[in-house]
Length: 221
Image (cartoon, rainbow, N blue to C red; front, side, top):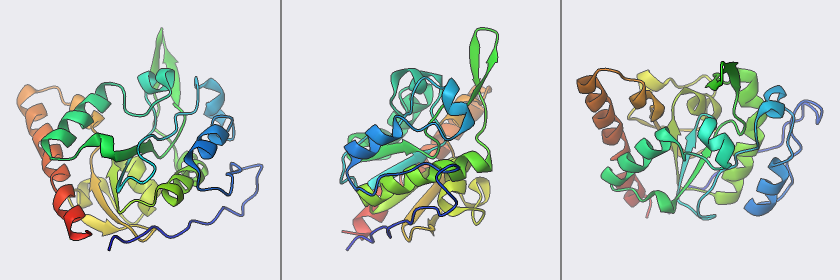
């Protein structure tokens, strides 16, 4: 039988510093509540909160970093270039994205202006900690069998400081929520590789990590 996520507890630090997350397992109610969250300072510059999406009973939950420019405008996770890489890699690995719940560790686009462009800024540890209550609410609601950590921000949110992407990628580890989690890179890292041969290798390595999902899921049947 699949292992179930433990019920995360609300932070006791105070509502003025952390979001007030409704005590509900209903994803629609959580999404609606998150839409008005303005706790993190960069939320006022984002177009909107980008909550997760997917089946409410998905057995696989993928966690990325934060919304990008395209996601911020669309209000949906992984709909930009990195999302296209993820879709293709999941398909090649034998995983149907439509059956996965996809979200990010941080729900707002953190950026800085560069001319007419909005350039991504990496979330800080504080940003990750503040937004983790929303991720925990998603875990509580979906109750997935497996977690997939895409990149260092996701790994920090799911493991704290107990795991590192490049040291532990391609490995299953027990997360702070009692669920087995696969650690791999964020698909945007493939896009950043300039050399064509190295880019092809980076993509192949990413697919190889994701091919570990179907057999692990079969073990939990």
